[in-house]
Length: 398
Image: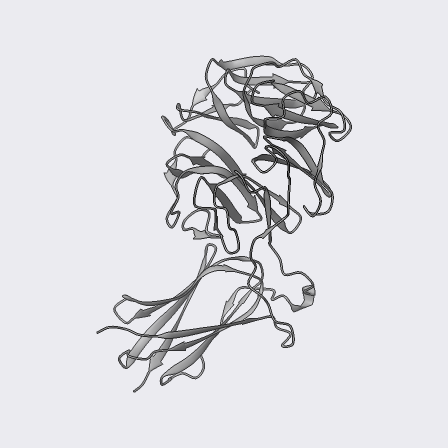
């Protein structure tokens, strides 16, 4: 029997006179200029957001509304990587090696690292590491002078520090790990991959590659594929906000997961350009750098919502009325933003309908479900939010 249903989602905050709109991406309007719209990296310091582009470094102090170039002394404006180390802002370029600035990008000086292509930075205490075409370099003076580590002669696209371990993502050799600040390296259980990005969240280490996303929970010894729902598996960048993981892809826009990568949903509402190369979180805003359309932003929390209106826990209420014919309402509470999936199953465990599978804000949510065309009987509705799942029973009577 073909199952037909109608779904009306009535999403609102507990305060009945405040309507919650679905969040979407908005364009910041910059950076502009030759190469400025090709954004490769971000660095955040308080309210200052720096964007590394193929037109130089740009700074915004108002969440991306206005961008200003910061390129005095930056003789190579093809910027692949940005990072803060101590009080220095450090830029990795495509042809001129590393530059550093001690005045928030107002003036730049060429560092003692002249390897032409610099792809990534990572900071561990007083050590600053750079991933380059010639391997991993280390600086102990905030990017001014550099020495090559024992991982040399190979292109390194990504770096991340997890606990006291340094991980390097190679262009074709998988992921390597160092436990002694780059003095020695060992290959991990992820080999042969083109690795572009990392994200570290607690004991979870994620690697974004040209063939999907991999997760290790044991410092790289073993890895599992975690890209269900990721329709574009070429991953350029990863970042996280709390327990929510975001992935930027080559042609599919931005995806998100609130289940440690177990399943992914597209986060592309309002974004007109889907080639994304960089991600960063500043406060309650997610920024995405695109390859041709500048910087976009996405709100991670509902603006103007008092904290007392946000639920304190994750709850799924009993549907009402129950039994029902033909419609009923299902309500649930979310204490934080995240990916939500609400499904209906029959008594044999077969999926009958997917009511919600998208990013939702904290608040009280109500769904009206109409079981038109469905047979009488017992059904189950399952709500999944992050790693938590709640199941309840309902009865349709004709």
